Structure formats: structure tokens, C-alpha cells
Length: 181
Image (cartoon, rainbow, N blue to C red; front, side, top):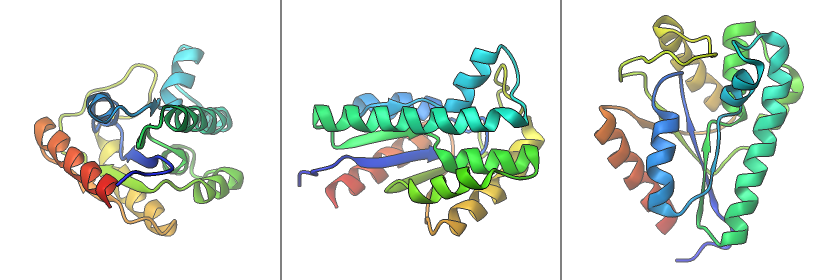
């Protein structure tokens, strides 16, 4: 079955759960454009860790990157676009690190919900990322926040866990099923 618009799939979840790695593995298999994680790009541009004021720039860049990837998918006739996080992650990280998230970002997260969410579980080794704030304790605390935020938005994610190969195989199967539907 051919899709007239690309399926928008988001890799989401706590820090250091393999979202970027998995996006890099999945995209070539499906010929899918990927929107990069905005928080990582903003942190790299700032030369260090993010602070509470950066959430607005992260959200604006997230929207821009998502829109560019989706336009690329439409132009190429790709059946799928992958987002290495989306505004749901911005909401969760804002709540976790700053105690709250600006209402405009929460509204935008609701309005821009994707078609499919793969929630990556924190059951792989934690690897710190330069410029980002997370640690293993933060990562464990973020999982229930992700589940709650997704539920608030009426999103039923597919949870992906296990080792690296298990994650990749599970995600491939979920995406292939979704594209056939």
C-alpha cells in the first residue's frame, strides 16, 4: 500500500537510550529522512550545557528540523520520516530539569503529535553526552515522566527495550507493520 503522506515516527525516551543510534540504523533501511535532536544541536552551538532559558531555542529548532525532514520526505516520496525526539521530549526535559515547561511548547507538542512513537527504555548502558546534563539517575527518573507526558497527549507509544540488536529488530518490525497498515 502506498502512503500519500509520510508516516511520522518519533524515537523518544530518556537520555542515552539509543535514539540517535537507532535513527541512524533505521533511516537507510527505509530511505527515510531524519530530523536531528534539537537539544544536542543547541548545546553544541552554545559550547556547553543547556540552561532553563535555552528551552525556547530548543523548541523552535525542533519545529524547524521536523518541518525540514517532513518536507524532504514529501519531496522524495519517502513513506517515512524519523524524528530523533520531538517536542514531547522538550516538554519532559523542561519539566525534569527546569520544574516546568512553557505553555506554548506544551500546546505545540499537542498540536504536532506524530503518527507513531517508539519509547526507548533505559535498559542499555548509560553513556554521558558532552554538553547534555543527564546522568544515570536522571535517566531512570525520566521514564515515568515520558510515560505520563505521552499519556497526557493521548499517545500510546510502542516501548522498545533490550540490547542494541533487539532494539533495532523490534523497531524495524514496528515500522514495517505501520507502513503496511
